[in-house]
Image (cartoon, rainbow, N blue to C red; front, side):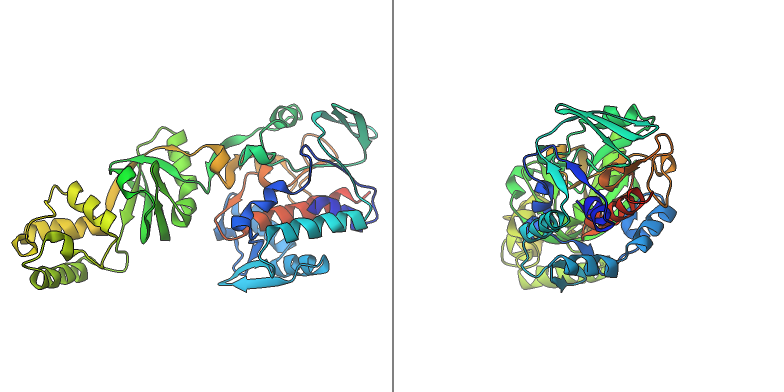
Length: 392
């Protein structure tokens, strides 16, 4: 949609071939339906991918460029902690604004159409579909990877793209939850707790993030898990030993926590051990920790030895669970992997193998953390590809 609007504003005749029965369905699901479309803090460190490439992309279409564009199509921005949303806080508003702009520019959209092949020729590019052949001077391919396949990104064009000479870096779910084992997750399901999660690959720390962790029946989810997900998915793909370290009290160091627990041991000496952790962590997590340490929660808190107190502190500061697999692509917000940037011309996102064919969005091997970064990458690459495609 962004590429089509950019080319349409350059007075080009534009046709969008849309697989689904309407455009922007995937966008409706972003930001829990609120559409966090960019972020005040925008730099290459917020992305996984070739840093020089990502830097060039976000310099070519800055946060201010993004805000100006959306204002120009009727989206008034609202900023919360650096996150930008439409003032309506409805993703549907963004889809409607983009669609209205396409109509204003007389861009034609053909819905429920399946692309079968794409090939460069002397006149430009020919696209074969289940409804016949279309010929164009330039083509922009922006079909996504495999995240949320029911919303269109199902990989059905991968073979077509590979037939152009391109390759794909392993396509793996990112910004997703993970199946884990090591604690009774069914007993802790539904708990949301502030904490720190650390990705360990073969016992080496790969990434870390702090925020609201979600304990589910299958394992762990939540924004901090999403932020380290790429490393976990890559580790699983490489068949490595993958673990998540969980700290339930990230604001404490060991000395301070031991002091706090010692104080509570005296305060609750004649109460059950359950009371020792009351008000410190969620009760379900308290029960889980004590079970994990094989400490009877019904004993008097005052009977807890210094050694047991130390073990309790260490477990609260971090316990590890084993990651067994990532959640299906259906539940991933974005995928890692895609077409290597070395196979594209950086300034135009044109294929190095097939003339007059450009790529945009998630297809390109670069993915951002949570916070509007992946949508900004989509707008930016859509703008660059659309602008390049509109030139003679």
